[in-house]
Image 1 (cartoon, rainbow, N blue to C red):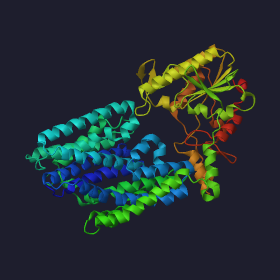
Image 2: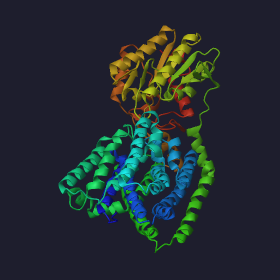
Image 3: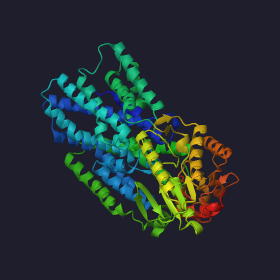
Image 4: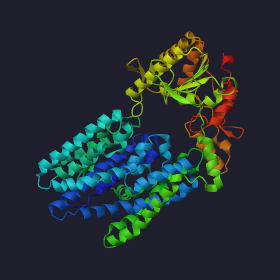
Length: 634
């Protein structure tokens, strides 16, 4: 087994890390930039298996020696980055954010951060952009894989290369099949956990097992296959986006592409020569450090600056990423990987205090440290998180209801965009007569829901439809009801396929208007006046955090105000309903003026996040829209 250095592998690392960095910078041309981690997995599986097979074949395999190499390779740079994040987290994070950061920091040290993020955050959610350590899930997956894989190879050392490939191939295929299944039924677990990711590392391992001399005997075939591999990688980077079920069948593009490049690119063909160019090799050499630094740098910049970062901001952050990566590679990675420069006992002496310091902070910060900045952080945070809600709540015939159960006169029905109206709808005359029937992300439309890959599968859509059917049964059996306040995130229904009575169809304005109107007509047929309220205006940014950060750092809150948006598809739905005699109550009338939308009313912040109202904001908006007097709304 040759240990010859292959510069094209470092070039491939560059092709993996640069799209990841650009993807997290928001560059739309790299919608599939996150597939760079799949390339890393294949490379890792290939290189580590090569080392293991060589050591086992030469009868000098040692599990302790293997883990020493992993410690030298992974921990020095990782702990350096973790320690650097701590002061910024302390200064700039609100209590809830700091609690989550502390938990993730402990997960990183224990190499289980993938479990933390699986339980806490969707990788593609907006909140993930503010997680400084979310990218460490990949390191956790790799290290979990390498707990078992070296021992497996050692136990199978007596098998022929063909039998070894067959067994590893079977395990790899099994992991891929599991990934396909989980992509439908458990997408978060599929993304973060080892069982459905192991096949990518296994694919790289198979290349190492099957290679005899590392080169194709036919140069023309090798050149063609390496070109095909490069094309598959580029194709994946361009066409895949966050809405694809991932990992799964689409992951075959970067994985197979990486396999072909690793197996067939060399100094004799164009792909090998391209990837061996010095700029690419240079980026590849520092790719691990670049990967470690980019997410904390981006996340803390977003945490510190209230308003959206500009393209110039991201360009400067990318430069900082690669500058820090080079310094880390030169001063930390390289010395620690040299056994002569830093003997192993010295490695432990240097790394142990770093790990202990990270763990100690994680424990201390697990409370969120709300008293920082003389309590100012906690005070500002409470405005975002305070949500008393109406109560009590109970389940009736499988339907969770909150509020007045005896003689309710008003029902609040919809998703979280309905729920955030409750403070405004429980004022004055409606305060004693409101009952709430809401389901997260589920709009109040009978027989209709939407399907969005990864998060909201067809099974989820069917659950939403059943929930609305139970609400309808409750309405029919509750004769005291006179008004129904309905609201939901309309974009979910205009931007995704719709599930209607078991059939999935593309969203169309006329059909959506028809189904909304049908629900409103049904309410009227039961002598209930429907009041449909549109979603709040928003600009795709976390407006609540913007206001909070402006107050914390004492900058102008008005910088968070934004130009009134216009979403033509949603407007066409509103026009269609108006033509049928249903006027939609628009929150814009209470928060926007002359094309500009405010994020505060007086001193009160309206938004708690990118689109939902705070409790006090809901109250003020409710007063302006007169939600507490629904019988006066025609």
